[in-house]
Length: 176
Image (cartoon, rainbow, N blue to C red; front, side, top):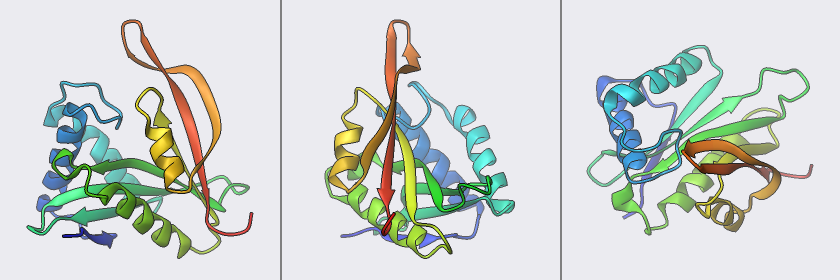
C-alpha cells in the first residue's frame, strides 16, 4: 500500500511524537539525517523544534507521509530561501522514510511528492538538497532526477577517522 502524503499538516502532539520517533528510528538505523547513532528522543527533539519554529515563521513547510495505519512513515521539510537573489529554489531537508518501509519505493514517492509540492510554489523552479557521501545516497537521488552540482570532500565528521563528503544535489523543476 502506498503512503498518503500531506503538505502542511496540523502540528499536533501526535504529529510531533511521530516525527521525533521516525527521526530517532532512521538515525539509529544508520540513516544520514544529521545524527550518528545511538540517538534518543532528547537528542532529536531540539532539532525538530527548530523546524517547527521555521514553519511557524513561514520559512519551512512539512511534507509528511503516513502509512496504512496512519503512522508518520516519511518526511521532508521544504525550506524557502530568504536571500532575494535565490528565492527561485528551495532546500529539501530531513528526507526520511522509516526503516521498516525501506525497499518499497516510498523514498521515490516522497521525492515525487516533494517535487510536486515545490512545483506549486510561486516562482520556485528547482530543489536543492545535500547528502552525506559514503552511503550511496547520491546515486539514489540521481536515479530520481537530481544532479550532483557540488561536493566538499571530508566536510562531514561522522566519527574519529571517518569524514564524509558533503554532496549538493539539484533537481530543476522546469527550464532553468
